[in-house]
Image (cartoon, rainbow, N blue to C red; front, side, top):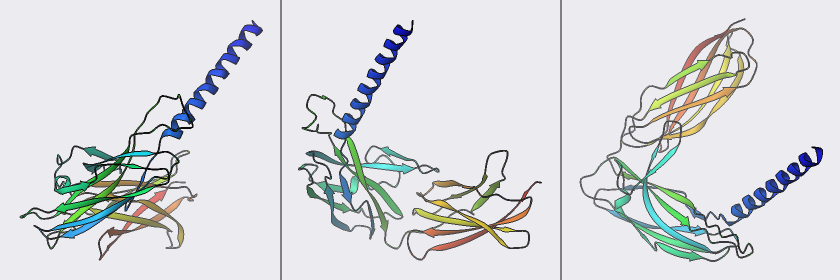
Length: 275
């Protein structure tokens, strides 16, 4: 039995090593090209057009066969991004966009530029969105012959078009909740806000904890978050410091943009830590 068990273990070990080698070989063939800029924010009047260029960099030692195309996107309240067919979403500017070229080949460590032109229709207002993707077909690394695996990788430049003189930033009251520590769980601070306007909002936030005498006790931050018109943001932050029993005030400060002038919102939330 010990010999059989040893043989089984050797087989399992060899299988694991083969799997790991295969994994790293596949990863080596996965090449993400890098577009610049990653975000394009334009202010255009209805009926007008604009043109620009996006620089694409191939950071790898492999040839990159690139396909450029346009899609719609949406952002969930927790920050996840979903992608949709071109022009299928409300507030999409995807069908206003033309890109050239749509296919190109980048040599190792090479660069190229993709031109875009956006033509805004008449009688539109608010803000509109799209993403220009650059997808690598997954050319196999010449040093890894015989792998026979082809994968795709894509990166995007996100476009926002604001119609001059028609955008209005508006949002719901900032809701802040505190979940006090329980057993081994830390104190959790959660905020939520809804975009009620016709332009996206970008929220940066932090909080300070004051004790019952108003003395500073600790602080924390929230990840930066974005919501599109009609969307909502919900973010949480863990405070890992130790809070003795007593009454506290959480002072949260939020800056809301991204376009100047930024709004500043301050909220105070009372909470207690039981003995």
